[in-house]
Length: 417
DNA sequence: CGCATACGCGCC
DNA sequence: AAACGGCGCGTTTGCG
Image 1 (cartoon, rainbow, N blue to C red):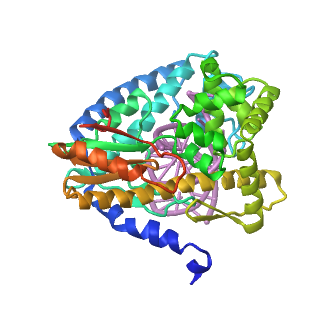
Image 2 (image 1 turned 90 degrees about the horizontal axis):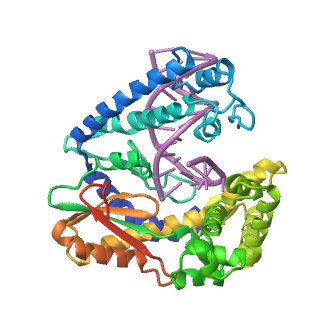
Image 3 (image 1 turned 135 degrees about the vertical axis):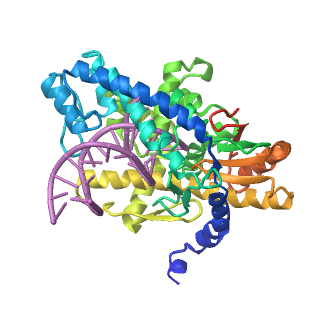
């Protein structure tokens, strides 16, 4: 009754319920882990960690707990007298020692680079390398728990361990991903939506310019740069594209002028001008954001394309900080949530296709990582599976622009092409 | 001793 | 490079 009243029956029936068993299967399947590989990595990294620890203690002129931000602040700013000018405070009012602040001190003392290197290794060892082997089951596979309704926006989450935040970016991260391997005679096949949140923004805002960028298969950052800077596409410089990328990325999080300035560098004026030019180039997006805020303020919730709601506290607050935060959440929720809806629907469609094609026992879903599905597939079935799952994920005839899926495969998660 | 926070940091 | 939106988790620290 309550669901019907809130118009969420379809979200439950058409999106969530059909994937309950699919998620359960993925959990039961698990991911095969190369434990000896992790043990070797652990030894290697622990050696480096110890060496860095000694170097840091030497430069600091004494031993302390490098893992303690409190002690780190006292050493750097009190004992060693490094400048705190322009450094951010933590939420609790202490001098922050997070990476973004420490890099500002790189020129002041060589200890900084060693601290950053230590932090990176410590994080990888404690969270992943030394932890994961203990969680691997008797079957040699790691079985995460995927929380289907773990977030306010509609995304899933993953716990014990969180398989959605396994390192991916830097060189060391790749080394960790390589610990996850496909069964003999199988490969990983990964399908990821390209720029899905920008595409959803284009759809939600009904912005023909942005919709056309995707219809024509153009590079979204270069195209947006061309519109915002008012130059032809072949005159878009590297720096223009970089700036457009920052604003494209920030816009779906409800970014304001201040955070744009912080992220672009330069003066407030320049940031304001760039910000204004963006919304001048995309007036439909400005109008859409305005409408979302107004509607959230009036109704107390936002909706995704498929009717999933998120309710907000603070959207009517008179405290600017509280209200701005709620407004940023309100801007982001339909975008992030619609993407979550789409991939959940795609999970069901992909599963149906595997069944009708008789491939259900040759391809198993392992993970969903927000805009990406990862399967383990029998080698001989890989080409067929690539084709049909890509099709299933891209087939959204009611969405008025193409949803593009990139496909990669490999024997190790850290080595996908 | 266990538990809750603060902090920092991994992912999309 | 970081991180406005969304998460989970390890370590430290302070408290009961």
